[in-house]
Image 1 (spheres, rainbow, N blue to C red):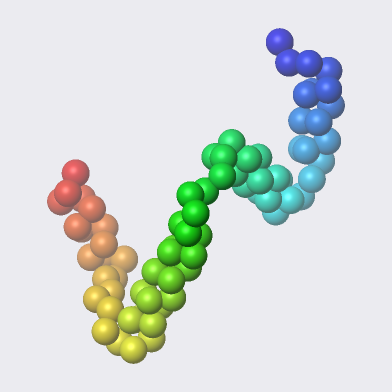
Image 2: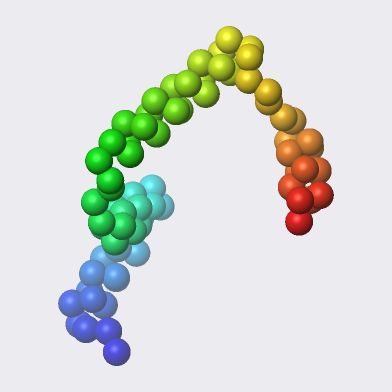
Length: 76
């Protein structure tokens, strides 16, 4: 059984806009993950920038949505 405080917070949360609820949900889930390993965030940022650069230079292999779906279906 949920505590009264929990029920009160949940009721207030449902009064928030959809985007506010999404942000709250993200923050709550992130709080369960614990601290990230040192350098992980920077490594992901570097990888994202590398991939974006490849797309912008035209050196990345991109797939259409249809091709992506076909490949996923074949892999299952």
